Length: 328
Image (cartoon, rainbow, N blue to C red; front, side, top):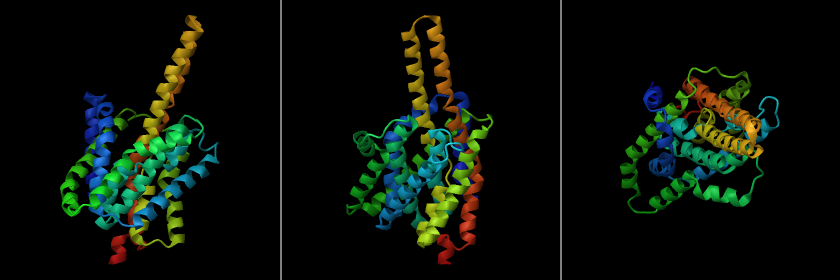
């Protein structure tokens, strides 16, 4: 019940606000990403505490996300586009996974959930733009994206504050403002979901949906058991892997669709005449429509994850793999 109380009210508020202010998400998202996410990560990391095991979780998260992406990339018939491939592996670990960890796991596990989010965020915003646009990877641009990532900035800020003699007091002061940023992030998620609410889920997205909510966390659980990870690492690793498709997949797809639309219109004007303009318009409409599939995937995976993520937590507890049950 606590899990639903953490997530459902801000999601509903976002859905309601979208009716009167449909452009509110576009206004809230940039400052939230630029300033809110680093600030929130600093507060959450300080509250959970920095431990050397968090580096282990960072490596594990990068390995499972990269490995999962390679596997789905080898199945082009089931996952035809880059958005479907990213959406099957990259989860909403910040807006959904961290609130889930707050509600379903003890405070000691929060730092590990945040570590997974840091790794997934760095992976998505560093490699995602090139993957979505089907561009070759350039190391200089990847390094620039890594430095500019809100996750990197939040982690560096947390490390610097941890080195001060006041880090305990700072953790207490930043805790509730950090929670408020998470809550506002869920409102933005609700605003984004409202755009495709009521539209059916295309059949082509079923493989991504099933993989993200069931197969991927099951594979991560099998890997964690094989590595004999302690419950304090295993539970947040599996629950973050079970998080619904990341909003970043939708944002990257929207950006690529907008760029494709602008390119199509420019090509139509260059061709000249009504025929060129019509061709450019048709191409632009087709490219813009590509953003609807990841939007539907984000919507349906988020709604279903309200049930599937608590089920994963229940299964972990039933098997004695949750930190609380292990300590009991």
